[in-house]
Length: 247
Image (cartoon, rainbow, N blue to C red; front, side, top):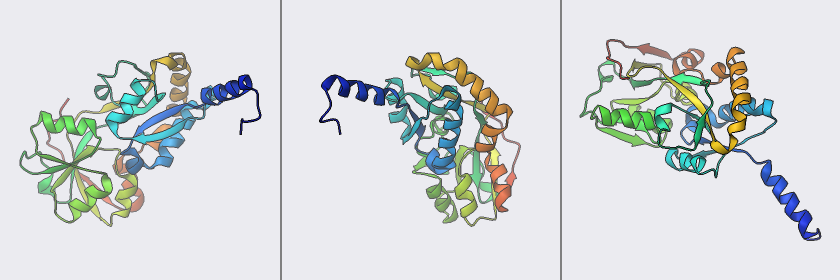
């Protein structure tokens, strides 16, 4: 569309268009776990006060974090601190957007245990779940998403699933299950939004924005826990105790 314009004007227009593009990476798993629309809604709400309408991409964990760290992408939707320690160019917005913990989920009460020989499922891209498997020396098998995880549990292909308590909100209600057992495995972690260091000047205003969205219940309502969501589709989530929590 630029073929009849002077070269200097073409360069100016292209530069202006590129300057307006702000792209946030979100873990590919979130497109299944929360649904793309909820993640996009939350990020747009966070950036509205700084007059940025971000674009969202949903990439595999390592690829996405690498591109944010290299400045190819502008920000990371949400991660716990321990998941980004090796990415030195990511700057944290100090107010957490939500909290999570790792839990084990099972259909049979006796299967909610961290048995090293059990073949427990984890969802691909879940950094914290993979680290817990290594720490506890568990035999964990990766599945692509929570849809695959539920099918495997229902068909008896695996006894249990380790994942965070913000997963499978939509899929759980469509699974046909009437109840599921869960047991917390870790302490509660905060999840933070990160920007590439080239956007350091945005941190104060984004902090104010997230503070407001937390206070007004917008973000907590978006990132509901599995148990909270299950109440709305009449699935009974039974929490088991007596599990030593990992730090």
